[in-house]
Length: 393
Image (spheres, rainbow, N blue to C red):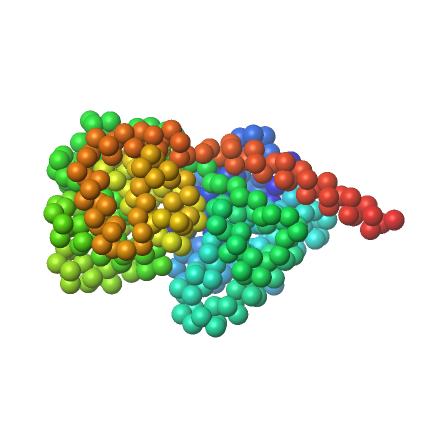
């Protein structure tokens, strides 16, 4: 099968959708399918090599990590996508590249499947600031979803969110989860000691790890407040924040004001995949307070290394977690979250055992993700052929 993947989020950008697109496309190729990936030009060098060709479209770069593509300026690159002659277009986005993918599908007479990864209204509010403007922009973007043949998502709470955006589907919106970027490889005591020394920590320190954008919409400020609550209850460990430094100055000011700046480590981005995999070995517990993420790959990555997560209950981050069995959840209250941290570190043997169960139950593979997509691809392709045949009679 020939699959055109159109996405607004790919490397050298940084984020979960970028990783998801890479993992998914790589597995498709490994299973014998032909893939062409189309994405924006990030205006920076990408040293990576991929097992599939990548076509990069001219873009405007007003916001870091969010290049904007306009289909009117697709030019020669659009012709490359048409010449690829895909059997199906898979839009891993709602924005500019989705519009280009839809136009290619029309030209080639093939179906379009769209995956909606993100709580888009929340994302637009982050950048556009005003709710009314964000809703207008969302309404404009949702027109692309209405021109697809089907929509899927990655978390069970997302279909209601998508419907609230104005999308209507005759059949239920399928939920197909992301795969794991790392193999299951439990952290050994020797590895933990070695990595902690590499990053300047003592062997016996209690360490919380966060990986992701260090930005307001990921609720990082909540984590710092919760860290203060934990410290006030006797916790003596460190919170290490690994990721882009979008709002780092704001959070450093917050931590300083709370008197816990020495307990919060702002490490920045780690680009090397092998080193990032090792970073999880630092942690006793992975933490995120994000209510924005849908099926976060970082929770899966931590589980692959045998590190359990503490997350906010009833949101995307908690959907893979069995409370007390494969991880932990907390109400969205800094005092409750901080108290949970203290209680969990009173029994580190339980943390280790929970991490082992997380490694067994939390991750799914990209092979699982592909296996769920192929029947849907085949169904959409057959329906499109039937539709075109009826149109010629």
